[in-house]
Length: 225
Image (cartoon, rainbow, N blue to C red; front, side, top):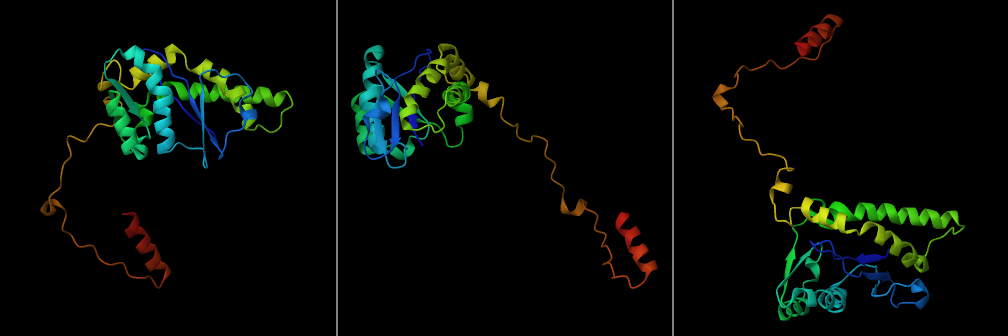
């Protein structure tokens, strides 16, 4: 599995991705398709870790947002970043005026702008590119095809319209908590608690196993009643 770390902003912009290969070393033939500005890393499982998270901050987030921030604090809202909040990551954020915020667990489908409005069209566009490649005679899609497929799919999905819609629907920007809260199940307000003495205290007779056809019919009628 190949992982892409993506980052978008409330004004409809997006940063270059960091692609994580499931390997120990990066091979040049995996990136023959031109992807200027993209960064690459490797891990055994193809997932991010504390080291890659710090590399992403240093190589992508900080340099690509610092000038636009003009010295003001930068708020980085993370999904699934919590396990990688090492001392080095926190020190880097503190030194560079980056405020690190983490989404609560199991809320990305409501609060993560990428999940809300970007990743679905991204998956559809990537699938379309893969099917086109297969129709061209490629039976097995490998790492060497990923950037060739992902780059055009990404351009199609990461539009300003989709990004702005994702932030608005999640209530993050413009800040509007009701956008999410009004879609949540409402708590019960008129719950009636029945007191024990209000319950019928009648003791029902214990059914007796019938030994005749007449007894069986009688038991059936009792159950129905």
